[in-house]
Amino acid sequence: MTHTDALGRRHAADPNARIVSLVPSITELLCELGLAPRLAGRTGFCIHPAGVVRDIPKVGGTKDVNLKKIRALAPTHVIVNIDENEKPTADALAGFVPHVVVTHPLAPRDNLELARLMGGIFCADEKAEAWCAAFEAEYAALRAMPKAPPRTVLYCIWQDPWMSISSDTYIARMLAEIGWSVPDLGEARYPRFDWTPELLARVDQVLLSSEPYRFTEAHVDALERQIGKPVQLVDGEMMSWYGSRALLGLGYLRQLARR
Image (cartoon, rainbow, N blue to C red; front, side, top):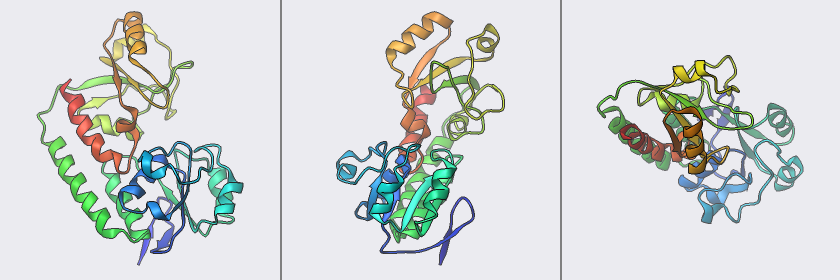
């Protein structure tokens, strides 16, 4: 049996795979599925679960991958993501790694396909199905919540320059699960913006993400005074990490909707 990745490439099950993961959230998922012993390498941003990944060799970051280190590890599979990793990197890896597995979850329920892809390729089907069942239960609980009034939120991921997200992102689709939408800021998936009166008139609330920029409560206080709108700090991992953390993310969404 073969399993199809985000580019339509087929991958056969391999019980003896040596894996390098260049996607932090998928590294965590692989550990959740009991596949940590197969992980030959990870990025420096693959930090969960801390006690498990600590001894797995690092191969650079998600953007600045050290191809020489990966080559030395001789993996059979490298896992990449269309948003997280650069295409030239994936192309270079394909020159010496037998299997480059491409992922691209765009919405919360895409995590079911992702878990089954990882479980299928690396022979952890039972654990993947158990995780999917837990996800379905948590998703059903989220959908069963009383619907709150719609809200337009400006989700900030960076400052200097200020950057947000488009509706065509995983984060925006997470927010949509609780009836929150993001303003149209142009064609870019992660657009830059300025704090204009016109923009502020279009939003009900501002969300500052804890990653990739390390926004803190100090930023919340300062920005609230500057713009005169409600500002809230949110856990960026819960909002943007697919894979195993997405299960916790659904519960986090339920809490967020009640605030």
